[in-house]
Length: 294
Image (tube, rainbow, N blue to C red; front, side, top):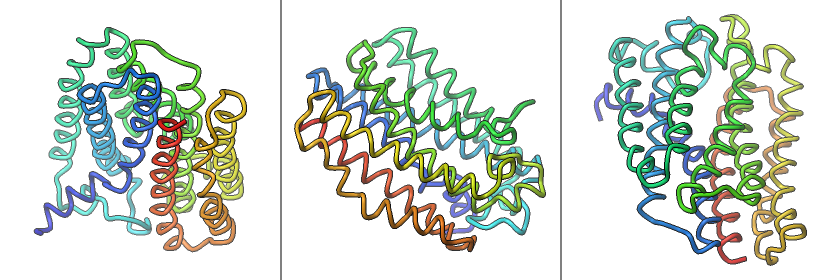
């Protein structure tokens, strides 16, 4: 693999893709449970979600470079633009091309499910760019966590459910809280790892504004929120006991939370970021299995 290809793969941040896959899986499982599942529509929704995620990652690579946020002190994967392997204009063009592909692909969903999907798609693309770009970048003004919670929670879960059923449901809203919380927990680890370099470069994440201890509490609360959702489905929404399958992950959840609280090593936090992404994927698979079976 040549260095340019490797740089593009790094810029796509493949290990963040569970954040796009997980909510689509949960939304699709709810539609399947209601006997309204469409494999073609769900597949296209997943492709759109993955393209928007990759496009957002490309945008982050470009705009963080332009704003000087990617410094040699930064821990984690090498940024393609900051390293000079990929020219800024090329990364910018790749961002817009990827987002354009997502838009064109999503037009079929608009045709099948209506204008609501067009609104969801356009706002997802615009906010993906605005995460680090534009006159008021969300990630630079303490709004990144809210963006991730909403778009990787309600928008992705309920949007996937709507594509299949042409309606929203209370179950999709409740389930979106788990997806949003666990996806945001990935961002929390990222911000905890980068808090020192972010402060120096003016990237005002919640970690910079409120400190590392706040992020550790946030991680704990997000995990707690996610694990209240399966019991809610069981005891309030009438699902069978199998919906509690995600609780099998409680030992891993406790381990990750403990490590987050006890470790200040940036390299260790880099490992925990990947493990938190895997945790999201496992939770979503077990939760989806419980929904389908329950």
